Length: 292
Ligand code: SF4
Image (cartoon, rainbow, N blue to C red; front, side, top):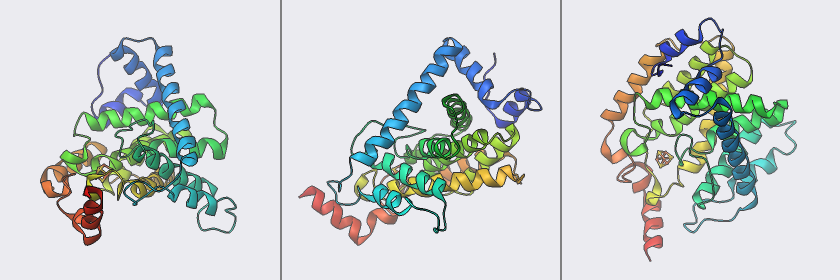
């Protein structure tokens, strides 16, 4: 089986929905990893289990971080959305927000998470898959398919541009995670393959240019709350795609545009903490306190 490196290739292979994207990547991974299809599904299942336990750990282990910048925000969201009837967002969005922040807070505590695609963006894909699964009662098998779909989207993007804030800014970490989660959400809602791909690139192109400027060089501010924002951004993209909205710029061209912006971005805005939020007076004070 030939490798798939572009979205147009992927849509050609899936045909007119004769095959789901998850099926194609399931077979491809099995071929490339030289593992049986069942072994590949078991790997995905295992990742889902770790994702689920990192949500639970994140909700259990709250407490202010050593830098004093984070630690208790997931609790605030979930408390607010416990009875969501009269709130502007519904329970699904409340959960996704709370879970994405909980996992990211757990990452800050050095807890166990699944990097998807990176540790800094680890809250986005799991919170979307788990949020939908809890809200709609989706089976584990359906969640495994959604995770394989998300992985396939990440793989296609990773073969065309680097997925690291230090090389291409946060668009390449939280932006790509949001694209993966948007595709997973469409998959869970039984959208078409084309809708999955368009949801992914709608998420990616609308976060193009997002810089990486972590305060004190820690994956904490703005990273943790950013996971919440971009998890909800994935839901917005998936809803647009499910409604039939497509990216005017073809999917593969969007990736090239994001890649180009990553190259043009100043190194000061790519994880070096030399600009943006990282050089504010407050950030400098945090750094001073840490070094004391
Ligand atoms: S701001 Fe930088 S360190 Fe933080 S999640 Fe984004 S890419 Fe990662």
